[in-house]
Image: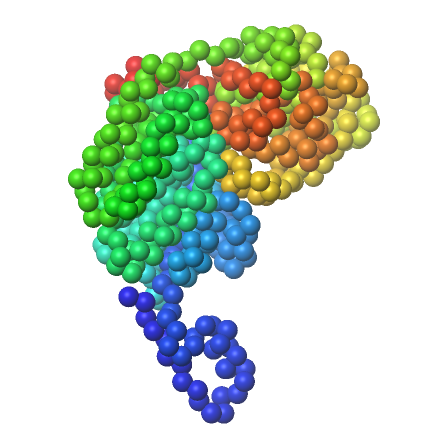
Length: 525
């Protein structure tokens, strides 16, 4: 139960002390809010990306700037934003510790993981009062020594705080959930939506359950069931079949007062780990049989969609031809082999090569290429440039392509997303960015290549608009993603077309040498 803080008035202490006491909400008879630690290490790790994710790749948004971090979270739509909103609604006092994240890439090094994990554990040990822990994790973090870094972190947190303290974990929709995690956390919740437009909603849900646990009003039990399948990312759009009816059912089940949370995660197919694949998690109020029954039923619903999830996508050459012939502008070509949000390089050139080869007009594309940015900035606005672009990170994403054109504009590369888009983020930074007007452009149909210093997932139209490019005026738009760009681009697209391109996030699993996943798995075998 929350402790009461009693404040007595003592003469001669003076006004400053009394004001300090009032500002601390330590009024006579007022209950002190339960203290909940907030922490997390978020990473989506692509096993087939040779570039390891190191400590310097992580940014810790909370340590040393806790109040500023909470204020920023209020403005965004992330999971932590939901924790903050839920804390206000349900009377929790949040204490941020380490909240670190890195852009998707190869597996996390042991050094990075152990360093960040130890900072979280040290922070938990130092807290004089702790009533619960909220952990914002991704669910698909692979560490050199741990197939599931998320499981290992939750295990260490449980070992640190003891068996009785409430621990609630939130995961991304692409989590590869290891059922063993239920031994170390009381509740696991994953995003329902892909594109991820509900992280804040899930954070509020977690805070509500936390408040109920601390007050003794609920006693969560959970069941986790995994169907033996790989649910290809091509079919992980939750606003359309085959997943929509299952997601709708998860929401309907939560209307039952005995059911606290229902999660259906699609899994992350680029992690070569035993628990790769979809999961169903049902959390009930002290009804284990109900949790198990409903989790199994939803898992069976996933399994029953097998005939609806077979690949049939055009390659780069076919996709460009279809886009050029279409009268449904703009046509959005989704470069799935170079899905930045899935851990790829952001410099694949297969579609760029075809756009130039087939003399397409009215296209726009973004490529991460630090050298190209430098060349453009050195040339200056209005100057002609000739340079090799893309294909420089590795040998998986095509070869550098010779581009001739004019430097149209140069930018800082920062922008703000005010709408709820994939992931709920608000502030983005691509680094210095140059817009190149490529040969073959006309005033009505410009061919525009944005070269950026850093990889940036195309979750927002402002990636283009902030650089003076208006998506609705282009005939063809290339985005490097899978499902994530749909939240931003579906409202303006005449046609969206997934492309089966090579790369570290290629959607065809036959391109990868899986060694550690459990077998057999539908969609892989």
